Each structure stands twice: as structure tokens, then as C-alpha cells.
Length: 417
Image 1 (tube, rainbow, N blue to C red):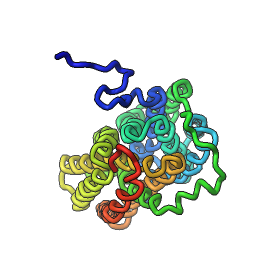
Image 2: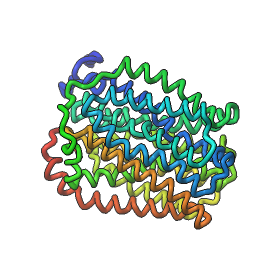
Image 3: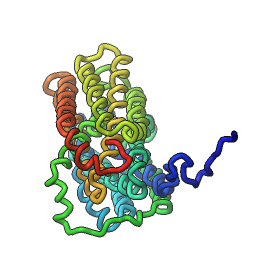
Image 4: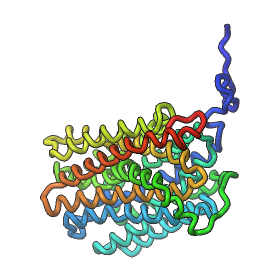
């Protein structure tokens, strides 16, 4: 008996449903990934450059931690207005506006220079628009895909987290050739190329919701589930981006690496977390987002506790950070398998709100590591505190899972939560 094969654009012969790539608009998904990827590259670019910036400007440990944390906080806060704007004029136009602001800010920093701690903070605020790309890329992709493919769609678009790898790999080396302010100018080249591709490939979904009154965008905050999602993502994405921004400083301070060597180590850790985000969405589609997140918090919390003891070797520290980043990356995909099931009609504003929670988590981790280093002589306490927050998230998830599965989870057909 001959096996039957369906053509690429045909429904699955087993389920009768369209495959993942055929169920939505793949050019938009690719454009969302590229836009997100390059935006994330510049969002965290001060992290791998931090050892060089700190040496040039004479920054202390707390200032270094705050400098790399400010873009994260700015990105978190800007995700709400960017999500609002995306629902008003469409994610595609909103993304283009944000990208132009970032390019203009980087060009200004390159041409005028960044000569003080205050100037790095001002640059960090502008880079927040790159971090706010999260509130654009995910709704842009999500609205094209049906519920059974939400985890994978959000995972592919969200894999733009890998832009942090590009920054860690190339920024320190380029800084040795062109100066760290020169890196800011060079970053505008790929940003402009991707902006052109984005404008040509991306398309707003026909399911774009009708604009709502301003107060309606804050209504989800009256739903306790929105706050839970903000906490859950505050741990998973906060852990990912907080470490991505801080690890170069950690490796230089704790093990005496050069900025380039620290960038390579950071890139390896960040690559692990970025790579598994689609896997996290796929695991959540198959086993349920709640089960996936439960495992994430246990593993990530354990890894952070081990890191807080102060690993004595670079190899051990790298191994623990990779485990933590793998867990956080998986959790990022799992959270955004759940969010569209619970808030599909409000996905634009919820992406902004939940993303805001994630950014605040990243700001807390990055800044607390700097403060711990400044006042306690070691960043280890910062890791331990974040592990405790992961435990709080685990307890909260355990408390709500029964209600979720018997209320809105039961109403979603063919999808595990």
C-alpha cells in the first residue's frame, strides 16, 4: 500500500486542517521575526558594550547595572502605548514608527557622542522603543494564526530574542575596531535593511480589531488573570533579558575575561534561551502551557540558587547559566501559548501589558545584580532574590491552574492549557 502525501499547501490528511505554515501568512511571520530580531539586537547592545563604556566613563558597579537595565525598563513601559497604537493604526505602521525612532536615536548618539552616565541613560530611554517592538511583532504574527498554532506562531516570531546573540557576538569586537560609539552607528545599517524588508513583507491581519476607547485598553487590568500573566512573564522573560543585559559584566568582573571573551560567553547563553522559545510554544501546544511553565520555574529557580552560591569555575557558571536560559526561553514560549487563548480579542493590549511585566522583571534583575555588586561586593544576592520570585510564580501558577482549566481553558476547543 502506497503512502499518501499532501502537497505543501494542502490540509493534513490526518486532521483535515491546514499545516502550520499554510494556516497563516508566512511572509508576515518572517517579517515579524526579522523586525523583532534586529530590534532586540540594539535593545540590549549596551550590555555587551558595558565593560568598555564603564571603563571609558568611569562608572561604578551600580551605575553599570542601572545603565544596562534602563533600556529594559523603558521598553517595558513603552510596550503599553505601542500596543495601544498598534490596535489603533495597525501593528505594521506602529512597528515602522518605532524602528525609525530607534535609528534616529542611534545616529544621534554616534554623531554627537555619549560622554557621560546621564547620556547613556538618555540613550537607554531611546533604545526602549526597540524593546517595545515586542508589543508589535507578536500581535502582527499572532492574528494570522488559528488557536491550535498559536504556540508555534508566537514562538517563531518571539525567536527574535536571538538578536541579543548578535549583539553579544559582534558588538565588543566591532568596538575594538570602531570604538563603542561607532558600533551604534554601524547598527543602523542592518536596522535600515530590515525596515525595508519589513515594509515590503508584513501585512496586517484582516482580523485587526476595531479601535477601542482609551479606557478600554486598561480594562484587562481589572481581570486578575492579566496580573498573573504579567508575573509569570516577569520571571521568564525578565530572567532572559536581565541575564542577556548583565552577563557580559558578570563574566568580566567575576572571571577577569576581556569584553570580547565575555561577549562570546554571553552569546552562547543567550543563544540557548532564544533557540528554545519556539520549542516552548510547541511543548505548550502539546502538553499544556501550565505543565510546561511548572517545569520551567522549578528548573530555572534551581539553577539561579546554584549560581547564587558563586560557581568557582567559568565552565560551571556557563553550564548553570545555559540551564537557566534554556528554562526561561521555554517559559517565554509557554506563556504566549496561553495568553492568546485567554485574551484573544485583547491580544494587542495584553501583549503590551504582559510584555511590560517581562521588561520590569528584566530591569529588576539587571539593576539588582549591579546594586548587590556595589554594596555587598558580589552579585550573588541578586540571583538568589530572583530565584525566590520564581518560587512565588510557581506557587501562583499552582493556585490558579485548577480554575483556569475548568473555566476559560475548558472553552477552548482542541487546545491544551
